[in-house]
Amino acid sequence: MSTLIINIKQLLQVHDTNTTILKGSDMKKLPIIENAYLYIENDTIIEYGEMKDCEGFNPETTINAKGKIVLPSWCDSHTHVVYAGNRTSEFVDRINGLSYEDIANKGGGILNSAKKLQETSEDELYEQSIKRLNELIKMGTGAVEIKTGYGLTVEAELKMLRVIKRMKQESLAKIIPTLLAAHAIPSEFKSKKQDYIKYITEELIPKAAELNITNYVDVFCEKGYFDIKDTEAILKAGEAYNLRPKIHVNQFNILGGIALGVKYNALSVDHIEELNDADVEALKGTDTIPVALPGCSYFLSIPYTPARKLIDAGLPLAIATDYNPGSSPSGNMNFVVSAACVKLKMTPEEAINAATVNGAYAMGISNMYGSITRGKKANLIITKPMNHYSEIPYAFAHNPVEQVIINGQILD
Ligand SMILES: N=CN[C@@H](CCC(=O)O)C(=O)O
Ligand SMILES: [Zn+2]
Image 1: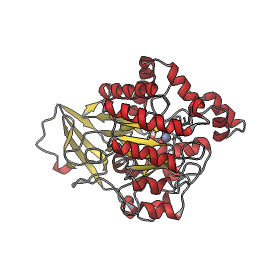
Image 2 (image 1 turned 180 degrees about the vertical axis):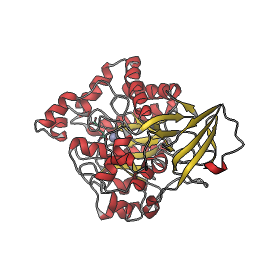
Image 3 (image 1 turned 90 degrees about the vertical axis):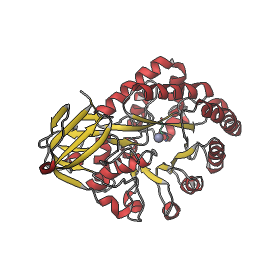
Image 4 (image 1 turned 135 degrees about the vertical axis):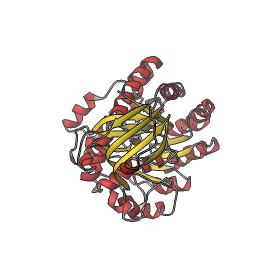
């Protein structure tokens, strides 16, 4: 199968040499080719360049992208797409004045989603989750991390992992599963948290590792959830099974989760609505990428991640949706890119870099995804007609995506 895309107004994120992460001032650079072509064979980007050099191809399909932008598909490195039902009643409670914390203290929040998920059959959970995944693919996402964490029992967590595995087999999108081993403390363990930590480290992690579905472990390191000591015990247990951390830190409180993540060579530290100088220092010179989740800040009306502080310190930054029923019920990366510009004060170039190359890095797949590079996977967005790529974040809440190509396949 071969496809030639011609007359591309702007081809974005073109890197002749494989770029796997962009840091600091390099995030301001977005290499583009004006009036370009792109040639794909099977699932791979083979060639690209200026239209004047487009010759010698004999493609099965030609797409005329006149007036349109072509860029790598969004790489969404933090989602909880597998969940059951929704939490609209808590949404209304929050409008009426309750906080996320108030709702959790009443036994709602994550515990509410866990109860629903435990009561939902594996097939039904798959059906609900694949529907969400297909919707976000249509909005331009080609690679996505999916966490467990709404199981809270070994049985339900393994059910989530099997659902993610099935989604991986059925979908063209690249899926990176993460074991969110410690997301909340179930009510039956409320006064015996240490027993729950033991359950996670001695039963859940070994059994989940046995399935061989995930390479990552996650913990919600937060007041009222898992403190630094708990988090360290879980990261250590994960390390014994070669599970690399990708952790929730600094959402409401700074507990030292960033430095701990770095100590355990976390691939990413996510949320960071709160940040201090020690956190910035801890990240410098490491392989750990911070990830901002503007959809969560928007939905919960909490601070936005201080992106400027991170990028201006020379650090990389990725952005992701955090798609979940409680704090960010949207998987729309176009909105996230726009919010990154408007609320995190990132330039369109920085936001697009954060949502492509750096998003891929935060999933450990940036050697094959996230840029237009010969040999990389043909996961692409073709936009609606527009004059400049800045229109993608500018016209917030519109859908800039006209067509998507995943693994070289043109989706309807
Ligand atoms: N903060 C922890 N976990 C999710 C939200 C979970 C929920 O409320 O269901 C997050 O990333 O925001
Ligand atoms: Zn999350």
